[in-house]
Image (tube, rainbow, N blue to C red; front, side, top):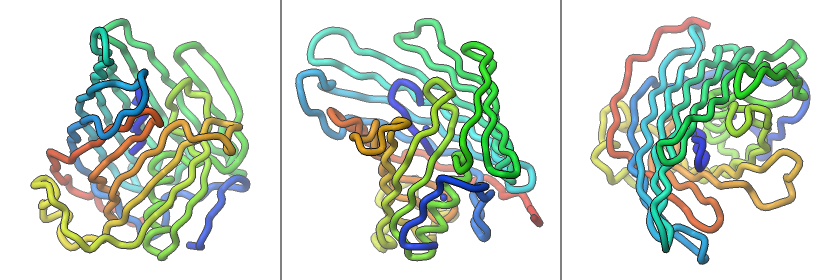
Length: 276
């Protein structure tokens, strides 16, 4: 899951993906279709420009398989209360469809602030046999651009993180395209993965049988603006990741403040059979 403020969201010790054709969903990774709701609160705040309080909700629906492709529906509403003045309420709705072979990715992202007119970023990306991406935007205006080989789509990236964790490795460096922001950016990411967590999850929503006995790992992913790999990350996303792709204990750090996301609702879906 990728989460961006105001927008809202892949067996070695170190894996760098930057050239050549990117693989599809990692072999052996089976992602669980599910519905999840996360309650957002202010985790930390530093500086005069940081919010004094924050609240919100993320609703996330994931479905599909490597045979039929993967669908996501994501909605985030966040209210940031400054030290003075009225709260700023941002809303984001995202729907995506990613083919199981990671050759196609359709995205539609609508954002609004204080219930104003929504901004829309809509388009699709296709990958050729060499791994290069061709991006075609329908909104905010028709645009086409090409991206060098090696960028992963979101579900593909998630599967690489899980595979890295399963293999006992701790670092994954990858370029990721998820259609967010202007729909024209490929973000550099650095994932740091801890060892398996043995303590039981505390929240009631995580007690579902679909999560019982599964391995999970602490994951921290730093997102860097294109061309700014040596600068501070645009934001850092931390969470606990189950081997079936479900996440809990979210934290999004924007530098001056951070939001925490508690899993308050979880409903597993039925995994579709796939023989690929």
